[in-house]
Image (cartoon, rainbow, N blue to C red):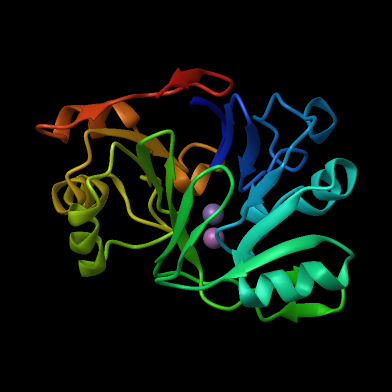
Length: 225
Ligand code: NI
Ligand code: MN
């Protein structure tokens, strides 16, 4: 499967029969180079939580591509009211889709949806384990370090995608501990340098992680898993 980093926490996934984005925060991200208009035939959109830097351009992309949004039940309910196709899941749930298997994992964070009418309840934030083409990808979403991450070791994660920027999520030191808990084969650091308050060094992270390969992606870089 081809994986493309779109900046912040956003990814594009593609294989022979499936195209998806995860947390597509593009038009609001000054560093992003892909715009919602550049995306086509997006079958699925994964959304980890309701914050604007993750929900991002979901509504626009989903409407244009007739995508199905896979997210928690509360955000799914909100998006259904905007006319979108959704597949609601919740923490601990595992579901087989035509492209592979999705498990929703816990994240320790918030999930409110900031709307002009006020904050809409966005349920519990989450991460995803995507089991596609025989490879398991764990995208943590926004989260602090949790003991729950130790349970991910039994999933045999091929690629973990972890926030390192601090302030809103794990910082570099805690993300290193998360790698020790999860024991993935490879790890990609995300959610840093987008804003001054989450400035962090992926190179420090790479130096500190032992026994797992760290892959540092620039925005728009692709990685073949
Ligand atoms: Ni957040
Ligand atoms: Mn965030």
